Image (cartoon, rainbow, N blue to C red; front, side):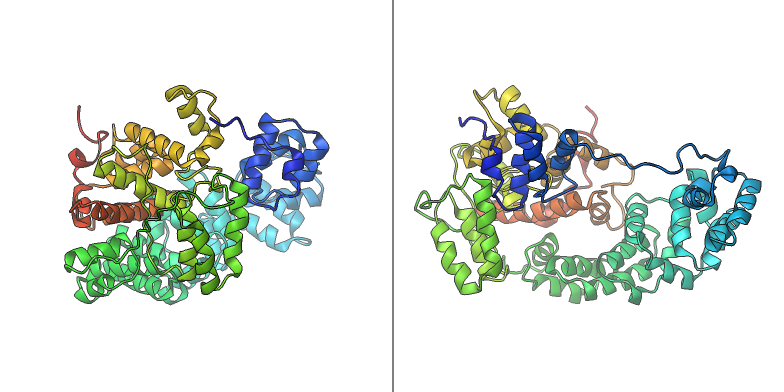
Length: 532
């Protein structure tokens, strides 16, 4: 096996900003040799400031603490503080900690210089501050109050009825999308969510409109859901999202026109597959490249920094240039890069389903191979040297901590280094091994996909919820929209579509309708929901 690939400062300093460079900066800090000046220089090139590499840099170069001009000021002595601190600390969250008299006295002190802050404090003295903020059209304070109160206060203040004009204005408030997603996905504060039904669907668009449709479904308001899904379908830009909205329009209305529309969709997704299944439509035309040549010339497929530079070339290529450039990668080892550039050439309209061969999975059955291919296509398009925003590495996208646990402790590979995951055979070996573990508990490709992306603990918690994947109206489709992590929710759908295609390519006659039907039958899907 290769030795650890710890790149030095000299090797990294001239590389362009990228996730790959972040990854190697992080490895250098945690495993290599460097000076503080070198890390200071490299810190200017960090691609993703929210990532692990920034945390590692902060340990070497701690950010200077920001002095607080109001240190020591609290709810007991706020009236004795200077007016700058009184204004700075006079937030809704802080205001809720004060008694009514202190709020009134503080408002009097702020009235001349900060009249809006003073009014906010007085509104907190009302029986229901949320209604006061709504009456005044103050969406910012309304939002802040929602997050500032404890659970009992939130129920008390926000179970009220708010008028449509205010809700339409509130829709435009910063943070509304995050609030909407949280409340709907977790089915919280039903009374408050009833107010979301008043929002004019014509003001909404894309994901907001779609989630407002899901909100309406959870409140048994199918007619309102139909309006929001119609708006989502009209404003979504991506084919799979439009198909998702059209599918819900079909489920609600039972109008065969939507099903026929889906059956003619050119996008491979679980909804277009389901429509073709029900309508006995023709299977999708997919491309399975089968190159004979083993390796590309003068190209190391295991080098993440090289792939970053190579992928960047596609941005400025026209279709002819991308198609021509793709040919250099038409080999078994680099077929992922070939598909990447060919899809660029086709405007991402053609469907490449790669089936790389490896001794590590040659003996796997059709079900296992279909699962591995379905995951690999979604994770990396089988490009060996991909690094994700969370620093998952390689073709099958293992987090470094998991890669090291499997390589060193479980498989006991001598001289294992996490960069070995950039080698296709190793990536397949690890994926096959990890699936051995996941499939002890999960039997359905959708749930396996959730666990591969979000973890086995996340998946267990999800599917054992009382309201998830049970028999009921619009199930299992509604549960699939209520997966609490957006990335995992969409990942599961895409992997499931991949799985159906790969199963068909390998001779299985499994239909996606069968896979949907089994999702509400625990004995067919998982160990967590069935008794031992």
